[in-house]
Amino acid sequence: MPSQVSDMMEPLRGVRDGYLISLNLGTPPQVIQVYMDTGSDLTWVPCGNLSFVCMDCDDYRNNRLMPTFSPSASSSSHRDLCGSSFCLDIHSSENSIDPCTIAGCSLTTLLKATCPRPCPSFAYTYGGGGVVTGTLSRDTLRVHGVSSTPDNVVTREIPKFCFGCIGSTYREPIGIAGFGRGSLSLPSQLGFLKKGFSHCFLPFKYANNPNISSPLVVGDVAISSKENLQFTPMLKSPMYPNNYYIGLEAITIDNASAITQMPLSLREFDAQGNGGMLIDSGTTYTHLPEPLYSNLLSLLRSLISYPRAKEMETKTSFDLCYVVPYTISTLTKPDDLFPSITFHFLKNVSLVLPQGNHFYAMGAPANSTVVKCLLFQAMDDEDYGPAGVFGSFQQQNVEVVYDLEKERIGFQPMDCASAAASQGLHKK
Image 1: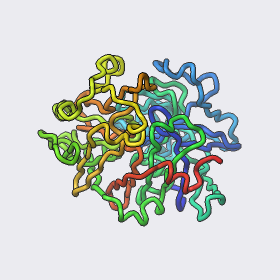
Image 2 (image 1 turned 45 degrees about the horizontal axis):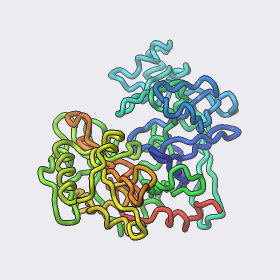
Image 3 (image 1 turned 180 degrees about the vertical axis):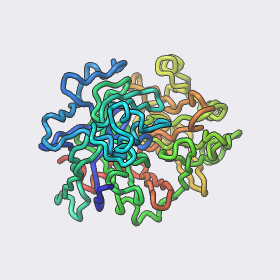
Image 4 (image 1 turned 60 degrees about the vertical axis):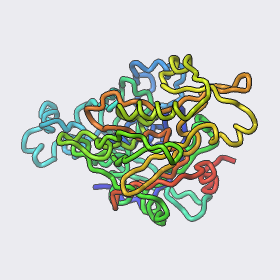
C-alpha cells in the first residue's frame, strides 16, 4: 500500500542536462543525487562503491561527482521479494510470473503473491536507448515535509520504499527518480497519485551552482490555490498510460506568424497509440516532428537578419545559430534580439516561452558578439511513440503544475530563482 505523506518539498538543483533531487536513503542515511524524471516510473540509484559500471558514459568518466548507494551499510535495507506487486511490475512482460518461476517459486505461492524468494534481477530500458540492470531493493526514504516557516524543516520517514539497486548501465551515469503514473513511481509509492506535484525549473545559467535550488512540491499544496494558471488537459496514451501527454494545437512567432501544417498527431493518438506531445523533464530539448520542425526553422530564418554561425551549427548539431551583438543594451533586453515563440495547447492555453528558452549562448562573447543557437530538435522517429516532446530546457522559468486529481497540467511563466529565494531555498 502507498505510504501517506501529507505534503513534501525537496530542492531541485540544475545541472547541464536536467534537474537533480537528493534522495535520503537507508539507516544511517545516505544521500544520493538523481535526476527528477517525469517520463519514467522506476526510481534507481547506482549501487556499490567500486562495482558500479556505466558503459558508453565517457562524458562522465572524469567527473564522478555522484556517490553510490551501499546496501550493506544500511541496517534497514533488504531485497524485494517475488510476492511483491513491484516485482511483477518490473518484470511486466507478457507473462510477468516467468522470472519468479525460474527463481524457484511454486505456482501456488505466485498466485497468492506469497513467494518468499528474492525478486530476480531486471533490465529497464529508456526511450532514448539507455538501459539499467540490477535488483529491486527496499529501504527507508526520508522526505522533507512542507512547514509554515522555512526554518522549521519537517522530516518524514517512508519505510520499505522500493527502488532499483543498479550495478551496471548503458548511457545512464546518474540515478533517476521516476515521477510517472505507474505503481513504482515516487509519487505513487508516497500516495500522491490522486493529488499532484509542481516544479519551477531554474534557468540554465544556474546549472552546477550548489548555492541555488528551486522547489519541487508534491501533494495537496502543489495544486491548491493554482486557479490563476492556465490548464490544459492531460491526454491518456493507450501505448504509454503512465506518461504525461498534452496536446499542441499551434505555434506562433511574435504573436503574429502561425506555423502552417500543424500535424493532428501532436494532439491525438492513432489506433496503435502513437502521437501526442510528451511532457518530459528527463528530455533536455523540445523535439518537434517533420515537416513542422523545418517549417519553424524557415519562418524564423525569414524573420531574423543576423549572420548565421554555420560552423557552430556543424559543431553542435543544432540547426539554427546566429552571431548576435553583445552589448549593454542586449544584456539588459535580450528578448529584443529574437522573435518570441508561443506554444498553444488544447483548451486555449498559450505559453510564451520565456527569454532564454529558445535561443541560447553557445559560449563566451568575443569581439562584442556571441553565438546563440535555437535549442529545439527534430524527432528522430516520428512514426512510433510520441509525436513530439516538451523538454525541460523549454520549461525553465515556468511554474508547471501536474494536477493528477483533475488530470490537467498548468503553466505560468515565473522567475524561478526569485520564487525559490522567497521560500528560503538559497544558501546564505
